[in-house]
Image (cartoon, rainbow, N blue to C red; front, side, top):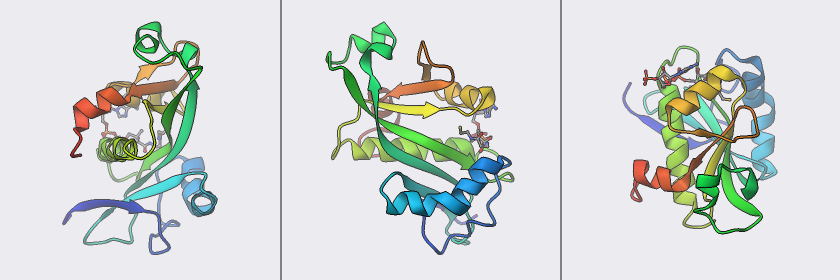
Amino acid sequence: MSGLRSEPLASSHDRVGFTCGVVALDDYLRRQASQDVRRHVAAVFVMVDEGDPGTVLGYYTLASYAVETRGLPEEVAKKLPRYPTTPATLIGRLARSIDQSGMGSVLLADALRRALVSTEQIGSALVVVEAKDDSAAAFYRKHGFLDFPQEKRKLFLPMKTVVAAVGKSG
Ligand SMILES: CC(C)(COP(=O)(O)OP(=O)(O)OC[C@H]1O[C@@H](n2cnc3c(N)ncnc32)[C@H](O)[C@@H]1OP(=O)(O)O)[C@@H](O)C(=O)NCCC(=O)NCCS
């Protein structure tokens, strides 16, 4: 590998060749992702190796989101203003190629960095994920995400934690 870079999904990326082992996530990249980008429903980023920039090693999506503040754990909610909803950034999907073990952490760090940079333009106090199964939830917990008390497999990370981990320079 010569070096990794993440970039917005483009027609030069081989979407058909991407396999993560979860059909729904492969199909999303093939069939839906470009349309979501065109409709401004999600921003889609892919990770590529600079030496082979057409091959997708992994991808993730980011979108604006809002959470009900009262649905957060009390110790988190009390540090936020008492607005009914709190602005957030949703990592809607995240998947790495089946042969790219370890790429999940790289993708997540990249997604968090982009989420943090975006807060300079559009406020966002949390990063939220809806894990598709217990295994994915465990992956996110391993990276510091906390569970919403009332919602199974929905997790969040305060942007303050991202700031501490990534730093403003990102
Ligand atoms: C979930 C996924 C992104 C993890 O990627 P990965 O490259 O295997 O993850 P990493 O190796 O970077 O894992 C980082 C840490 O999380 C842990 N982890 C990864 N998958 C885990 C799992 N299923 N359960 C528990 N911990 C897990 C690893 O043990 C590792 O911990 P360590 O650093 O202490 O060794 C990947 O398996 C994937 O793309 N799966 C298919 C799509 C999917 O399920 N996406 C989830 C979005 S809902």
